[in-house]
Length: 586
Picture (cartoon, helix red, strand yellow):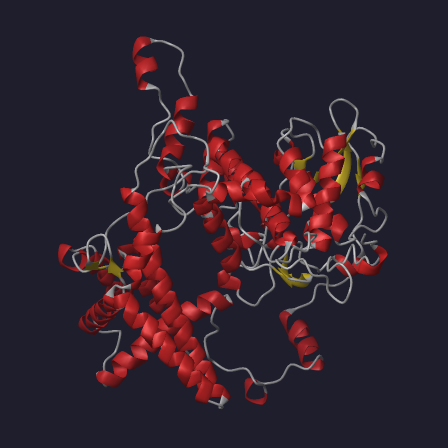
């Protein structure tokens, strides 16, 4: 065998010229620095800070952010402006201040945004670091809010309360039942994977990207479990933060069917969503999947996804007619999660990080190694202690002192106490308080402004003017809603609580579902099934799958009309549509 002679540098460059390489003057190669790729949401933050600098430069021509005094002056302008547009704190009647950490983050955004602009020189490190130190001075901190938000942890007992409210007490009327199924499945996936909100659905930072959990990222399999029986499982891939350019490092999480109570089984919503969208290539019903025999030990049966479904989002947005084929967005989903928590009796906002923190604390408590926790969390470095760990010590000091058995369950109780759950929490203002609010000067002014805007809209014909007026009207509506929300929050603090009274009154909102559940037969069935201590393959589990699929596909509700009149001579429920002529009236 003849050994190939090693190519010299001249040989390689000769080959390059034969392959099209030319002198730099004959190419489109320039000397401009190449900025890093940023996400759409991050670009919005950058543009906001650059707009502020452009306005500052317009007012003070010739100023440069490379000058330390100028940069301090610029940040002073920004903070005073941000504080001026903060709303009034109704509890203290004082103007709220922008948060210290928010100001630091926005200054960091400005540094990065400045460098992104073509031909801008990087702001010297000694200048930027001096600004960060300036922010730590007492004089600067007096101009911002230094209040630190309490870390909340959605512990297991409170998560169960949340799920019970979602399925057995919630009075919220969703536009389509599939939204409820999606939210339920998303909650379980987040809990079991410690994911951030924008890793299974489209993040605000990735606005318009369509990135999130696709069917291509959902590995459905049937495994042989420890008892030698068949068991369904999934292994979703998280589109984790900071891993856009390293997809091979994205965390994958194995989840399985063997989980009781029934509502805790993640395979229930996973199979429901896939079957409702007819995503499987070889199986079209839950009976076909549950009838698959166990594979050989250590091997799996793959449930193949149809080719045309691979790039379809797993969690889709819904309208009144069903799934739209577009990925769910983090903004509306987070809002629904927070409102669900409020309806369940939690005065604090139950954000995605409440679940993520508790999942990571559980992983640490259960003895997983630091490397395993980093992989589970999707972290490059270990930031568990400063970023997620509870400040409540996990050492039982009393037991340690007296040499008795530690009572570990107490620490979960203490972690969850910041949620301040109250089953009797007011969900709306009393009639007298509402009437008093409607007569208050600021509320009346907003109501009158809304009436004026309504009259103007009747006279305007230009689309641009209509849009501007509508945007202004939406802003005024939001300010009026905020007044009501502030008043409700104030009323909740004054509300007396009877700890011994755990029953909802007949006319209370939590009792609404019990009065109307018969009008929505799948939800009626699911409210009775989901909290049974039964496996997914039981009769109750199979019934839950079928009812949830029906919710996802059909949005089935009894067509209630106050006048009880049919539409076009037929029952208005599509699945019924029986002609009224078939009924014999005596």
